[in-house]
Length: 253
Image 1 (spheres, helix red, strand yellow):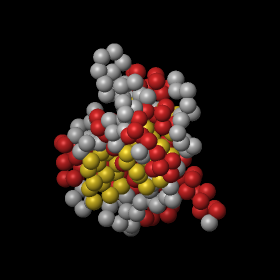
Image 2 (tube, one colour):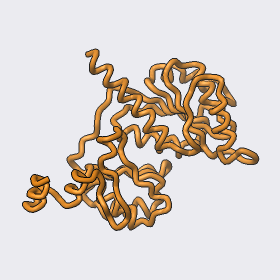
Image 3 (spheres, one colour):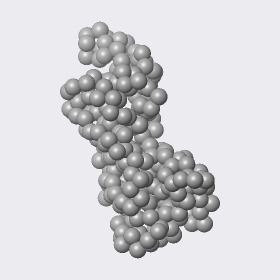
Image 4 (cartoon, one colour):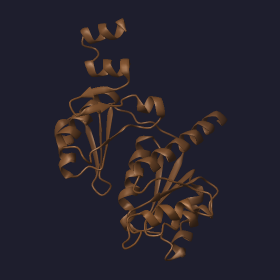
């Protein structure tokens, strides 16, 4: 502890960084940022912008960059994204407006580099938002991502045309709305872990994602399912599996 206090005193360590080393999180006016999550859990902490003001989101993003080198913001609208960019003028900003994600990284930040690939397939274009959130998490975990768009079960030929890519991936995330059938079909065709990501697309009874998640939970093929629109969770879970695959390959090398 004395070393940390002396580092703060001589300016080589900020108070926020010192707090993280002592408690594992940084305290701000907008809340506490779990800066140790990636070290503790292997998954980068995300700042959920939904329900937060742009200023609150930016405050937490600054704390994230200061203490972990990078901020990953999810469910961010234009105002959130602009506030983060304004608060971090020297950061490298990567925004996906469709997925509503913003990544702000310090210029010297180095992402992990895993020897693993995750394929992300969508049933339709409307599923791209949740799928993009999963992809953002995976990229920040250092995973190679293969996107396969609009291959829903209304025409099975679209899935079969991409079967080689699906089978070559180490993990597959499948985002689908409506009845959520695509993950079941894919899981019956590949020998790798499949994570179903139900999406709240569709209309009428069950169109809010309820039919999709129930269909995945009742799948007769082997797959896992996350909650509706939970792109971050699907990406993080796939990333943890991919990291185990990468570690195994390193051990065999």
